[in-house]
Image (cartoon, rainbow, N blue to C red; front, side, top):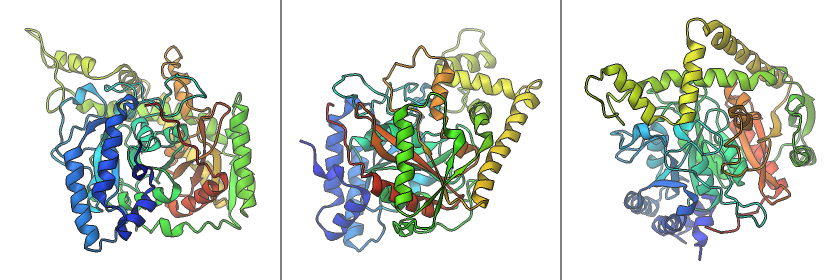
Length: 496
């Protein structure tokens, strides 16, 4: 029997905790019980029950003392990319086996200061590289949803697959994710939850294992738009330890959700109408536009002409930054070190350690990145990609300057696919999963995926809203309108 407590949203739990109907300890115990039953999902990879119960007791004391923070007493799952003091933080890679940081990431520090509770670390693609959670050293995370009556195990998306699976299966009330090219929004769409990628610089990257530093951004993965607003406020803020963190005030995002979007202008980019897009995605998109129109928004067609270059641009810039960031994993200071043969020198140690420690997808991206940064190819690839990135950002700037308040697009080109179904596909086929999401990272904009329907086999489908920089509150307000109109309440049938 599943506890009803774990099904609560953050907003519902906050109200019940304040009213004294439930304690943080009861909420935490209910989540821990669900996690123990859900190993088949592969979502939680390092469980922290003792720490969770300590934090819950502290949260209960704070609430009794009149604590006002809405995150106080809320049990969360934390993506394995966030460094958590004294708790394994491996980025789902063998190269970081045994690494227990002596420090805490800024985002998780802020969540614990707010009174939130850590249930454990969540599965993900290795170093956040992947769209299906199939590159993890822990094995696959599994989507709690199934196609009709089929037994096929489906991907929860990636790289924040464990986060998406845990939230969708009600193992935790919410989870942290990170998004470099869609790694919050795509898994959210595949699992029927809400995923928000904030403006680049809104949340500190300090203490989060780096993939591509100019693209990575942490964000909340939640059961509702309101929950995303509540959790983002606790995660966001200026951090002097992160030079890319923006020194601008963090508003009350929840207060921005009025449900009124009359007079707002929503852009529909014609370039997102992809060849071969499933009819169900096309219809979902049209229905979403109708919902926003019915709520009083003006729907206009817009052009983002450089969209067609977004994927190749992303897959030059992201691997280039990854090859630079991952050079630190050399077996010298921390993590895995290969056993060396007699006569091996430092070069052999680097080679053997990385060959053993990095999985195939990480090796592929490091090789691509090193190639595009090499002397003969820097201008041909990396510099050209940087110029195209500037043009992609300019397309968005011009749309917003022309009066568009938010942009509506599909979140993914399909519903969740089966684990292993892409095994024989060209890697580029897998990269196409990010076709609607990477532009948002390249331009540094906020984007949110909202579950808005199901496909013919009952799998969730999401729509994406893209907002103006630093206008997460306005974006969340439009997202709330879409959530209300879509009325998505489907839950996965329990099989695990």
